[in-house]
Image 1 (cartoon, rainbow, N blue to C red):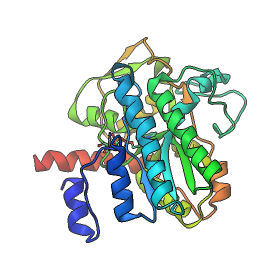
Image 2 (image 1 turned 45 degrees about the vertical axis):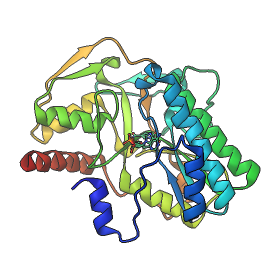
Image 3 (image 1 turned 90 degrees about the vertical axis):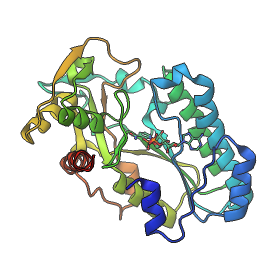
Image 4 (image 1 turned 30 degrees about the vertical axis):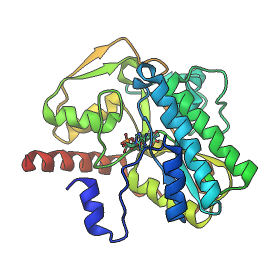
Length: 303
Ligand SMILES: NC(=O)c1ccc[n+]([C@@H]2O[C@H](COP(=O)([O-])OP(=O)(O)OC[C@H]3O[C@@H](n4cnc5c(N)ncnc54)[C@H](O)[C@@H]3O)[C@@H](O)[C@H]2O)c1
């Protein structure tokens, strides 16, 4: 069942509005009408690679759209917790300056760090236009928190996924790789010998963290958000994991890494855990792979 129909039939108070966050007066009207007691802002032009082809749309949606929501919240519900899904692309290619060690299957941090924390600079590095528009939104969210004392939380996601993840070749790698393996579609690994590492977090774990924030919000606080080291995988390790589940991926290799692509990004969750000690990661990367496989198979049997 499409998500909208599911929401409308399962939640009596769900209201769907076909609106565009670039439309400032519509956002004002909506916030004035509904005065939400919690805002979760996930609307975005989400593609790192696509942004260069549509830089005006990218900036208008990601930066200006976010500003419109903050302004509407300030005018009509300034006490309501507001969660913004930022991205680790605000760090640009700076994670690639960390010295790395190479193992048979992945890159990892040579200094033994668990992952990347919020002290990494967002300044003076290559971001991609997507990273820049999200960084603008990230800073303006912090500012509404700090300057206007609004309960705005900025969550810099790495790879957020789940059974309904609509992935494409250059966005949402875990869901896309599962799709290719099950649909017998060729998969191209772009650069870094397939040893590039990402950590994966399930959308339920993201939602439960937002709920913790709702119950105990902070003004303008920034958090890195991902699955952490235990949920990290390289592309080679993902292929191996799928092979263990009985799915062979038909893959080839291109030397051309994607511009600014992180070589090794693992989230350091210390700050989130420190501020929200009740929050726990409940989904392992194996669970996520099994769910993605199950979704693919049920869509096949429905079609
Ligand atoms: N999925 C990830 O791995 C990941 C990682 C880091 C950050 N994020 C962030 O999480 C959020 C959700 O990402 P996603 O992966 O679910 O992407 P998605 O493309 O599935 O969701 C984005 C949503 O924004 C909506 N949208 C786009 N332009 C809009 C506009 N002008 N007005 C209103 N709605 C608009 C789209 O309809 C879509 O429902 C985004 O802010 C993204 O930058 C995602």
